[in-house]
Image 1: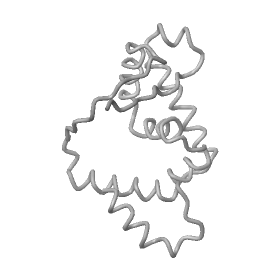
Image 2 (image 1 turned 60 degrees about the vertical axis):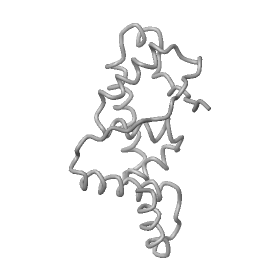
Image 3 (image 1 turned 90 degrees about the horizontal axis):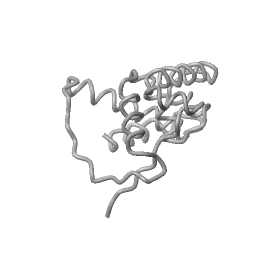
Image 4 (image 1 turned 90 degrees about the vertical axis):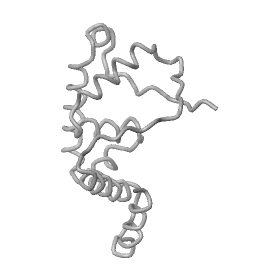
Length: 140
């Protein structure tokens, strides 16, 4: 899939005024969509390498946030991933999603609100904002 994204980017490179990372993310998201359609949305299980959670967050909190995140719509998940996982700016994330920065800000605000609504009450009452994503490190 990565190769397909780079092939598509290479083919379109000459026709784009200012190719950027958000432009490449957008192409990659289209390739992911094509692959999902091709697979017929059949669930696929993938084994991940062993990961170790840093001690910055309690494991129980990480599990709760993960469950809350999984309960969100794919659109809300994508908005939050672009900001907190990929580290994109709001303008770059808006470009990836093909919307204005204002529309992206509204989507981000609503995604935060939906995430807060699904977080267990013991966490949402003690913290005023959505916790940052935990840092994972591969074990060697």
